Image (cartoon, rainbow, N blue to C red; front, side):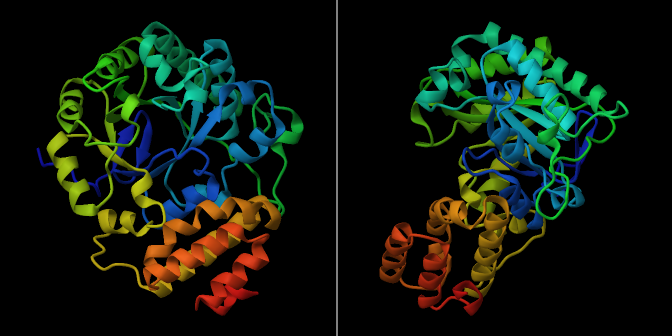
Length: 377
């Protein structure tokens, strides 16, 4: 049997994924246009930022309208979209998974690895590593809810957001549906895990086995660092390799995925089914092209500037100009090193962008740095 390549298609349950390079869930970042950006550059699948199961269950209007939005261009890309959920109540998770499946998500991911205290103190995220029975119950409820939501989506007259109120099925300014219909087949449920709570702890490894065997999870996205270290230190790729060898389901490797050559070597060494890019692709969507299309050259400053234009335009489409101006402040630093300006100018520009009052001011600052006139309007 030939060795799998990152460019090879694979199966996630009944879902066909065109390649093995995925976009990871990025908290507070992974909205539809960030996912679409990754798909434009070759991502085989994308996962949304984490969404509260509680907010979906209780029909929070902004959550339903913004965080469950799957843009028509995402659908047209041919790469699946997964919505990541977090929570600690199995019945609430069942309800949320049903809504998300009915709303058109092609897969659902459960967050059991977030180390942020405000998530963990609710019993969600990495806290579930300490409560494997609840974690399994939560995953089983999501699998069952996804099946219920899929069935509801196929019912004549079902609205795009499943059991959500009618206003959750509204359309965007261009008249495009916020959420499409899920394709045929079951909606697979995956779980994103850390290796454990503390360095040396392998509770995530054991939990992964139970989630597949007892809850029917379709794949595990594994970050082989402990929750305690967040993103510091070297991931335990040997543990990831052991999981890939023993788990009767795909293992999607994440953590430390920052450069193309290193990613290729780690993918080959661990035997993972796929890799998932997170912080390494922020401001560098060309990393997908390197891995999927064999791109060898770095993006030119002109390409980076055009990409930043695209991001600004899409942020305005998503949030409106006022909110986009605030939201984009965290995006600018990711692009600065690739704009072809020296470090001193990068620092000065970044400080000014953070202090800018609105998007018009930010565009003027970018124009003053020698960026395209299109950004100065």
